[in-house]
Length: 424
Image (cartoon, rainbow, N blue to C red):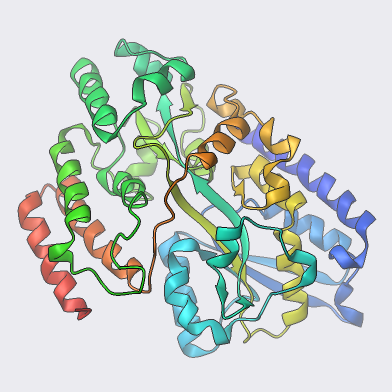
């Protein structure tokens, strides 16, 4: 079964990582041992970073070091925990997972994170990945993964609708703009009665990442929501096709359950989504991934590891963060849960480019996501207000997509909620 294969891959990768670490000596993280005393390091993450087996490998190579994993149920929960700990000046993990969308807000607190600059890690990551976590020359986050997007689909349901099932033919079917994707979905729904995509909220997140300045100009000036023609156009576009949405909010119980009952046929799928998708759809056959994305390309998500200065074991935490984000470990994480590497060396590694995923009909996911990464043309500016404005718009979409409200009325409610933020 799928979980067993993934676990086997992870275990194999972790074993390899242990061997590599042991052979590299203390400069690569091995043999630190806490300097004569036991050290417990906490690592806070969310969703799937693919670190479970790597923690064991690190402990094995570093006697005296225990790594405790604090995994939040959702990214929003992790962000809330992080912000609470920053406000209280206590309670944070030694190593904190940071989602890319939080960076602009967190950069104003750069002085409470450790500077992770080190000659040994220079050039490790894609330039844009490093630049996003750098403030006045201070590197406050080591890149973990990036999120080049593709389309996941149920080949068995496509066959029921008379659509092509081969991933190459599906890519040809869906190549084009968002209307191409939605119109194919309308034909699918007419033939099967099954929703085309999981929910408008998740789809919106993929679409808004294709805007250069979703909510703020590049100098940080907020674009009033009432004047934001680009975001309103996406909102209206999704509302036009709400009849082919399953109306599910991602990470909700209903969304999770829908993977087991033919709840929808397609969804946007950055590589980090492969793990949750495969886990939720465990035992369901037919999922595949096509090398295509409406509008060309897009990046959704990706994370970093940061070391808060309030920790008790800062140097040990830095060492662990550096080790977890080294190319060898990021390859292992990709093999385990699909966390696509942001490290230059890892991107070119044979282990990445040749990887296939048994759950997705042996899709060549390494090749697909490497190609999708080259299609990313826009890195959206995410200023300090991105998260709160995006939440306002997301809530407006959820009201009609999941709760049946009128889209026009819900947009007006969103404008009121935006005004209450007091950003103008």
